[in-house]
Image (cartoon, rainbow, N blue to C red; front, side, top):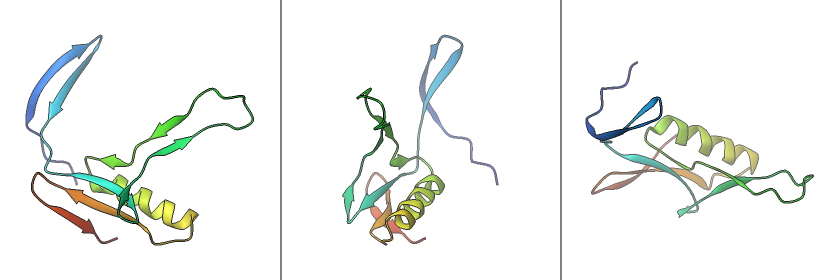
Length: 95
């Protein structure tokens, strides 16, 4: 199934790339016990070189659902949920 063509709000060029800001119907976030999360990882074998932060909010539901399932499996819990935010509503997605 292909994605619908988004409405482009504005755009600009960065080197060889064209960057466009597009409208979205909603954003999907992974929450833990109803609270927003941040993901970070680092190599503790190397003296502090900084953290790498991962995403926990996505423009499509599939990535958020996959991340919530993965975290629930790793930590043996059901506390990670996916929430859909639109301009006016908030809804917890079943998965």
